[in-house]
Length: 340
Image 1 (cartoon, rainbow, N blue to C red):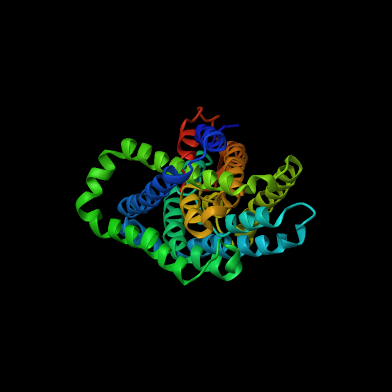
Image 2: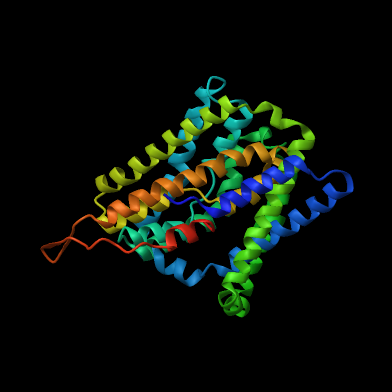
């Protein structure tokens, strides 16, 4: 099972923030740099997303509506239901982070990679992930305002203005300029990918530094972390089952069911971390912890499922074809670290 190397970097960044948190003037510099990094991240997201491909995907609207419903309706409902686990399994801050996790959009790259390994509908996975990311920029903050309210670091009209300025405006700017810079972005994909990851590491360092200075990590114990892992494992198992058997009940074929399962059961670390930083402020460190743990868990579990699905017999033209064992793939592990 893959251990996402990027998770190790994130954990190392958390450790650095615990040992050497930014304070005073350094904290102001880190906060300003983090704000700029978030805006640049969403500018790149806008520059990468092909509007034409997304519009072409509307032809398969039933699949995309199903994925969006799983991501922004079923997930949040389960998150609200988990409120009954406080305070037995979860503390209130950890529950808020878990609830925020359920509001985050789906991934793009890892959904595509796992769908490809399992021999599912890859174009559908591309469009589903793109739709989810696009919709999430608007829907996730609105859902956070509705279900988290004032608990989201003092969520207010000022927070909405920050979201628009830091997330939506840069994204739209990237979309507008994509016509001229899209080729450059595509040619320098690897370099800009490193910029992506470095920006997110900066956001994590700033958030966890603020948490250390505020002393909020005294609220978390190993027992509480264990309870959080159990809850997230159950959440992932429920969503994997609902997306697979629900898609079957809706009469989707095998390829579409695979795309729905992988796109509808996962959450994006790359989109969620910057959003949490804007929404939760000094409390972002506890808010992103459930998302970081869920991200690694979903990669490990979905990698196993994708390999098993790749061995399923597939009916083609009335014949049943049993595929040969697939060659080891680097795509699932390498792409997962840049999940959108």
